[in-house]
Amino acid sequence: MYYNENTIIFYNGEFIKATEARGNLYDQSLHYGYGVFEGIRSYDTINGVRIFKAKEHFERMEFSARSIGIPYPYNNEELIDISYEVLRRNNLKDAYLRPLLTCLPNMSLTKAKGARLLIAAWEWGAYLGEKLVRVKTSSYRRITPASFKVNAKVSGHYVNSILATQEAKDLGFDEALLLDMDGFVAEGSGANFFIEQDGILYTPQLGSILPGITRATVLELCHELGIDVVEKKILPKDVHGADSAFFCGTAAEVIGIESLDEVPFKKQWNDSLGSIIQCAYKKLVLEKEYRTSETAA
Image 1: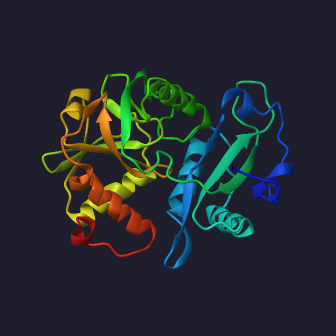
Image 2 (image 1 turned 180 degrees about the horizontal axis):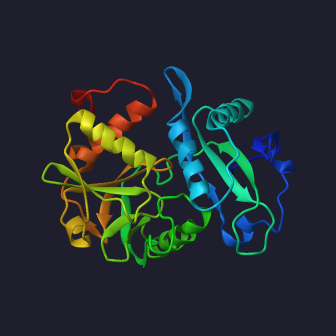
């Protein structure tokens, strides 16, 4: 699904076939989840292939690495050029890119002595699909900033996401919504969360959530489109009474939510603010102009 015998990746300083890549069984990343990564999308825009917000993604990867003590001897502009070359060598346009920074062999619980970089790419549709999703409030809580660097995109953090997602799917839902340790709404397993109430969008404030790059883009779009948005603590009961809701993230893009815990939202998705944002986001990543009148249509 992700590669074949012809797939080219960038790994440990060179372009090689994915089938020829070799790791090490004693890497800290393999044993302890001690690594960082990014999820980035490229689009076949009207101006050619473009990696959306590449600079912001690699800057966040650098921040993530430095925040947990992983060396980062890379130039982000060079990594952007390498990413475009990975796309070119694999003849990809609309694609998902995965830069991953893993640590060298080390069985001790000490900071990394060095790191290896992977940049891979593959065709991947919207992570949660195109239809409205049915969401379940998870029994698992979002990792706490008292114990983790929650604003860093660390590999090991995503065990929390896997547990929450699998629980939801086992119960017949599409996705999970996690609360923080204080019982306030945090985020989905791999996407940020917004609700609409009385013509205003609300989203959990920073603290227990990953400050998503798509989340920041949605906030920018709201400002440009004149949509009021408030960052605040949100209780589950506020969500159950909301007009509409959506997830957003690089992998998921912007996707509407049908219901939470089998309680449907009041508005039809096509009449919601989320639908306007969804349309505007798609136009933005494809480098098309958008106007309020167009996105509301």
